Length: 390
Image 1 (cartoon, rainbow, N blue to C red):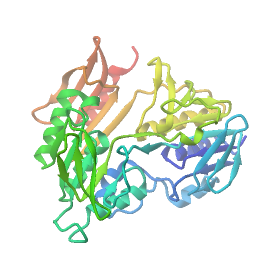
Image 2 (image 1 turned 180 degrees about the vertical axis):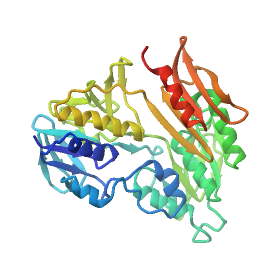
Image 3 (image 1 turned 135 degrees about the vertical axis):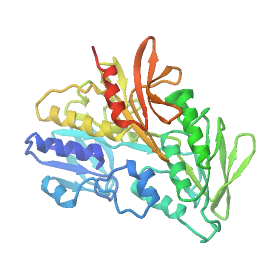
């Protein structure tokens, strides 16, 4: 019963490792679109971007070799025949397996009609992060003549906030632009978003929120600014477009699978006979929440992959996690368990907002739907019990 994993991501590698832990000794192939061995994505917007740290590999090469799997890297999947469980790749390979696991992740969104300009970046892959790091670390070179380049970050979500914080930490002049009322306002609501805005402002990030971007300006093929809706222009030597990402499912057109904001799966993460999905690309039925759910974070990638592996190995397991994500911005560490909402009632359950160390509960319809920790990771995990079924 061979297995083909499409996506050399954290979820892809976790599926492979979990299968081997289940004493699954059948052939496993891991197909990756990027040329790099599996690496960790969260550091790309933080530690890797800010330093000259090496490749953030998930595992040493010897460990990967010990997994006794075949790796095909730098060769993206371009088509799937789900009925025949056959995958075609860009290089012309045709791969067939008894089980296929889709872990292709996300594709970053761009501005409408975004043109390829020097100095304009998205951030999803190791190559993206390396290119952006080179621009952020540029000093007195080419068109960048200040101590640090003037950076405009377009996007006020988790990625935008993290990139803005990292760039500011490198000495760049940073403007954060986005359509929301505050940083992460749509996810975390007015109270926490307001505090996060204060953190950015105190660190010298200029916030231009509640503002839509109309396009980019350029001189000689290099970005020169960001044009806001209404005509105002913000000068920029580097622009980072951090407008979220969409599930990487374009290659699944005509596959026979149901695709709607991700690969649609049942509660066992099964998309079809012998077809599974895990990680950012999977949208599965969460029985505990009684709804389809798709999560974009490192923890989910590993945990969902483990469930897929258990099911392939003949140990039927439903996937019903408590959603979780985290973000580090400047010296602020935020952990969130559950699904917060901007219109939820927020109360401090432990600690103090004034001291910038607290745990908050998010309530809707009289019940706690999420727990958020601000610089209190251990205490926050203890409050997670309020989200567990009685």
